[in-house]
Length: 236
Image 1 (cartoon, rainbow, N blue to C red):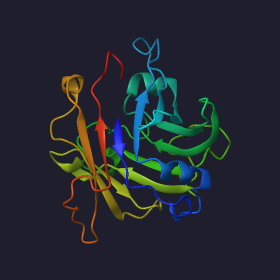
Image 2 (cartoon, rainbow, N blue to C red; image 1 turned 60 degrees about the horizontal axis):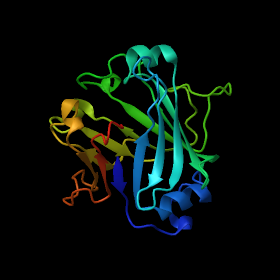
Image 3 (cartoon, rainbow, N blue to C red; image 1 turned 180 degrees about the vertical axis):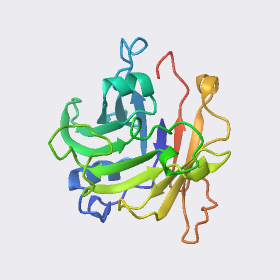
């Protein structure tokens, strides 16, 4: 996946939310284009394994962030890809070693939201992800626990709208509070995607700014463009 971002800004002005530390702001503000690559695990075709991703600077191919999935084995094996999942993002040093947590992402899935994966006619059918600053764990200190994490470090969220965007796959990017529904950006993909088409075609998803009146900016991908790349030499 490759996604160009707006031109870098000074790290101090990267984000007004004080939960984002200066080191994280420096990483996000210094790179305009990223590559996200999923790791291939040897037994993944036999038993569903927790996913791992590495985020690279697209221009230099320097590894910046490692993403580790935390999920329960049972729901991962029987409910994937609609299982509950927590993703831990850790910054990497030049040698590829983890240095400090950047963000935590949680997506509540089955069994607490058993209607995911079908037609989105109400909120219980809609995928929704919360983004937290730094490392966030459950109240008892245990890792994971999608849907059970405290919301005091939420910096944003994304959700699928009712009706799912119609013929266009859509994700609403919401403001930084866990309860408000102010939409400031929208991710829209192609009408036809997925399945065998992913083996031979790149799939672009435009990230567009939402105006105050609720209309979309006419500039395609004026915030960013996310491209799901077709497999290269058998890789994911």
